[in-house]
Length: 210
Figure 1: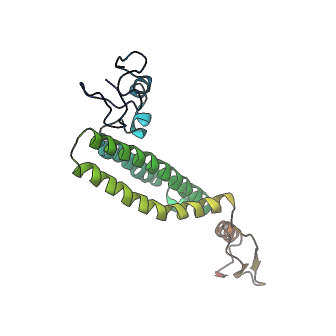
Figure 2 (figure 1 turned 30 degrees about the horizontal axis):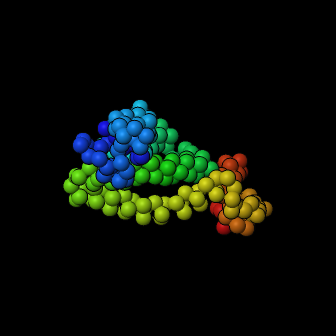
Figure 3 (figure 1 turned 90 degrees about the vertical axis):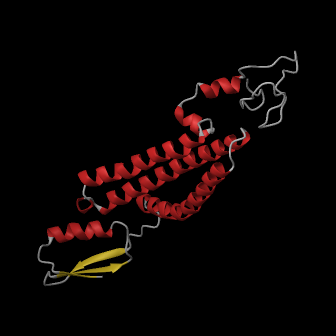
């Protein structure tokens, strides 16, 4: 039996929902609704939606889904770095890669945290122990504090990738003897790649003066 108002499962013979306090009887005829539309839609929802609404058990939301995210990101990064060594990747590509990783990590963290928090709340409403749900919510809060630190880094990388704050006001000058490269101006985002390309073309350059 499910609550008509919020879709929370209600154990008979309860007359009111323990989650929202609404009556579980239909006002028009006084009969109980065994499968409200909201509950049916959630039962049929996919794994992502179930987690987001906190419909999954807390242990599954916190440990299983958390491990899946850890495996996908950390193992995935290790595989990519194995096939594409950082030393062989241009700085622009590297910035784009890490900017994308940061953005996806933040989105995944929000999805994981919201689902776990809601699952913990449901666990408490069902009369479960208070220690484990509160511990999970405490860890989620610590993760939120860490994310606050990561967000500026992601914003900075995105700004560099799309050109925000990248100032191309610099000049590259080769000395008369062709042995020294002088860099004058601001350190722009595309400067390292341009210097590397110039060093490959001018093999006589032995020093770079910044």
